[in-house]
Length: 111
Length: 137
Image 1 (cartoon, chains in turn cyan, green):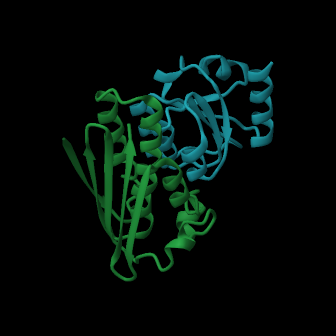
Image 2: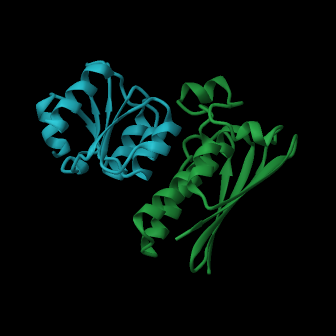
């Protein structure tokens, strides 16, 4: 599944990084601890979090993640948007809570 | 042999990860195996972030040898009182601000240990720490 299909399916907002919308998704990872993501997320995963600062994008880029989804209508910081555009990693948003969007993504990817 | 050096500024979270990102690009150019690059990136980022989160300044030196990379991070910081405790998963001395950002969960040094082949930590309280590690390609 591509990031663009996920955006359409769950009506996600694309804040930035649209160059990466054709990234292929290998799975998902849910965490608000950045070292946890650094240590354990895998390439091509979509990262669901409520952290909005630019270190999120630094980690997403270093880990070759497919996209980042911010939950509960959290808004990204300005430099997070810049970093997302530079790296071509989509920064997405939803009004759903983590449990709900993670559940939907899980169902979608394992269906 | 190729050597890259980076200055790291304590407290500057905007720059955190820049050195790791440049090292990653160089490893890709050198066509190092992706799984090995991933291990190097995790260990290097955590070491870089430790300087940003705890020290006033530091230097990261990466030496690319034919069969391994050697990374040394020297910081001017508070030093580590008890290295064994610092190596324990979950142990952290990070500030409230750092924790709110999602760092400081006590996973940094364990992540470094897990991803390196040789790791050496030297520290003097009140002066700073030197972390050096090797990862074979």
